Each structure stands twice: as C-alpha cells, then as structure tokens.
Amino acid sequence: MLVDATLLIQDVQLLCFTVIFFVLALQRWDDATRRWLWYSFLANAAGAVFDLFVNHLPNWVSRGINLEMIPLSYALLNVAFVHFERRGRRAMWISAAILLATLPVFLIWCNEPTQVRSFGLGDLDIALECIVTVVILSIGAERSTRAPRLLMGVFLAAFALIELARFGVTFLLHADPDVFLHKLEVISAVAYIVNTSLLPLAFIWMMNARLESDLLQQTIVDSLTHVFNRRGLDQALERELARHRRERHDLTVAILDLDHFKQLNDEHGHTAGDTVLSTAAAELRKRLRVTDVVGRYGGEEFVVILPDTDLAKSGPVLEYLCQTLREHSFTFLNSTLRVTASFGATSTRGRHHVAGEELLNEADLALYRAKKNGRDQVCFFSPVEDMSAPLTQRSAG
Image (tube, rainbow, N blue to C red; front, side, top):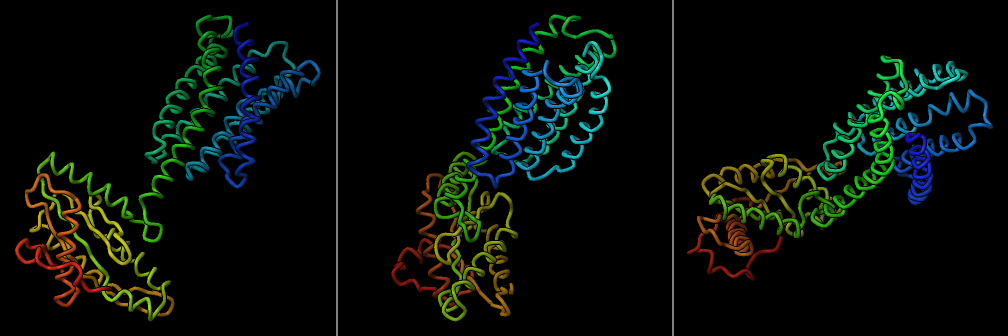
C-alpha cells in the first residue's frame, strides 16, 4: 500500500538524519538541544530497525513497543524544543504522560490479528505530541527564530489534524483509514514524507537563525556594559536620522562622560572601573524609554539618542539622568563609590539632512563646555559659542 511504501522511504530518511544529528551532537555534546534532537531521531531509527526485523521479533516488541517509537521520537523532540526555548518544562511531563498512558494499550493489543486499532491509537499519540510541540513553539518570543517556529508550528498543526482524522476513522467509523478513504491515504503519505524532511531542516534553520542573531549582537553590543558599541551606535543613529527625515520629528543626541574616571581607576583598580561602567549603563537603560538608544562611545563615554525629542523636551530627561548618576551608590567589594557625569547635547533643530557625525561633533563640543564649567552638569550645543571651542582643549577624564 501507499502508506507502507511511504513508511519505507521515511525510515531511510530517518536513518540518514540520525547519522547527521549524531555528528552534530558530537561536535557540541554539552548542548542539550543537539543531544535530545539526536535522541529523537535515534528513537525513529530504532523503530526503523524494528520494522526491518518485524518477522523475527516477539509481538510485544514488533506490535507493541515498536508502535511507541514514533510518538517517543516526538516526545524527545519536545524535550529538544524545551531546551532550545529555555522554558516550558511542563510540556516534557505532558509528553511523557501521553507515552505512559498508551504503552500498556499497545502491549494489550499486540496479539490482535490486525493492527488497525493499534495504528489508530498511534495516530492519536502522534497528534497529541504534535499539539504539545505547537504549544512549545507558540510560547517562544525570540524574534530571530520566529520564521522557522511559525513554519514548524503551522505544519505540525496541520499534521495533527490529519492524524486526528485517521484516529476518527478508526474508532468512530470502525474502518481502516488507508482503505476507507483513498484521499486520506494520499494526504497521509505526503504529510509523512514532508514531515520527515521539513522538521529536521527547519530545526537546523532555527538553530542557525539564533546563532546568526547572537553573532550579529556580538558585533554591535559592548561585551562589558551590554549596550551598543560604537558600530551599533552608528547604525542606530543612521536609522533614527532616516526616520527623522521621513517623519520630520527632531531627535536629540547626547554624549556623557564619567567625571574623573581615570582617577577612580587609579585609586580602586580597573575592576572597580568596569563595575561602575556596567552599572552606569544599566541605570541609563532603566530610566529611558524603550525607543531610546544607549551606547558606549568609547572608554568612559556613553551616547544617548532620544528620538522624537527636541532640546526643550530632552532637557529634563538629561538633567534627570545626570542627577541619577550623581545620587547612585556604586558598590564595589566593601566600598561605596560616587561618580558624576558631564553631558553635552544637541538636536537636529529642524535640519532634515544633518549627518550623524555632525551631531556627535556638536554634542562633543557641548560636553567640552560642561567639563570646562565644572562638570556634573548638562550643557546644550550653541552654534555661536561652541563652534569656536577647539576640541584639543577638552579635559581628560
């Protein structure tokens, strides 16, 4: 029959993927996702071996335990998904409960002349495991893996409906679904083949999507402070300037410099300095909007980008940030450190084609004035006063 031929093709595919995922698991055995993904295909491979030696095995193995192998592979796949998503552990226990509930029935029915009822129960088993998988995929919130999760979720939902239809024909109509309805047999055969190819490839796609996203983050995020680095800031500023040109809303750019930071490093060590930098970045992010941008400009300097904010609106915000750093207690070992910051800010001021580098230069000039005037304050760029101030006069630290 068509389904039997399909199952043979499926078994060959599964054996090939078992070898591939074994190699992938060996490369990073500490990765639980890879290990459980291989265990999933190993269960399928065990079922394929049982199929090959079906005439040489006792019924309780060939007609009992063997029918649990495919549902078991889906249950193990769910464990792999849980490890990948780092959440949803309750789903693992639900998958295990489904297996434990049906195994005794498979063993009881293993001596029946036909296996129609056993196959029907197996279809229900697979459908329930697929539904659990769909739920796991749906709770994921990672943007980089959204496309492969959606693809697998939609397909597995459709596949679960096919399996439920087969179960319904078996137990409600008391008929063999492969004989009762030819269309259902064809649809099932196609779904089995697509399933065997799509799931492993989509899982690989999902893992690669996360890896690519992580690598991208490493190129634009500062490893110490976990805010944008210089490259990430440049990209964010260009992105916000493009939006400014479209929507004609001003944006503010500010550079802040932690005062006397070199002296802090000399007195307390660079580890203390790192603690201050990471804590300061966290405090800035905590007190800004989600749409605002914070990045480490270099050394002890940070850049803050405030979209849809002119100088009048940004003044209270920057003063608040300055006050926050002034009043915050930076704890290092048994010491409490106090740090202030000087802010220099500028705005697009209706200039629709201003460059990001120009805004940073203006903010830098305003920062020079803030440090010259005594530090621990916010100064705004003034075209008349600041353009004449040479950057070489700017104080260090």
